[in-house]
Length: 86
Image 1 (tube, rainbow, N blue to C red):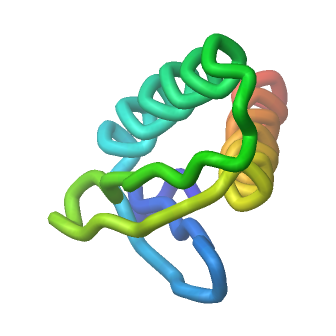
Image 2: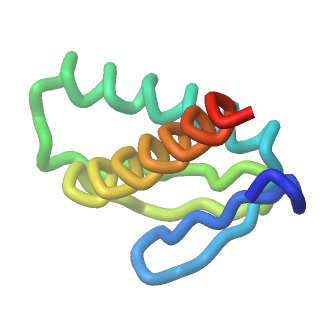
């Protein structure tokens, strides 16, 4: 994962490859989306999610948002484990 400096994300059966720097931006964006869902308290709303570095948008709902957030957290945990090895 660290060798090619790209990260593969799967969103609703589509694969996207983004750079590490875009990944960290994407993670920050997901935190803002989480704040939106917590504030609005309406999990039935769908939103448009921009995929960094691709210029593409995807309509997602709360369920799909949770799946994306889980995937991103797993990638971050992987980076954390790799950093502790060295």
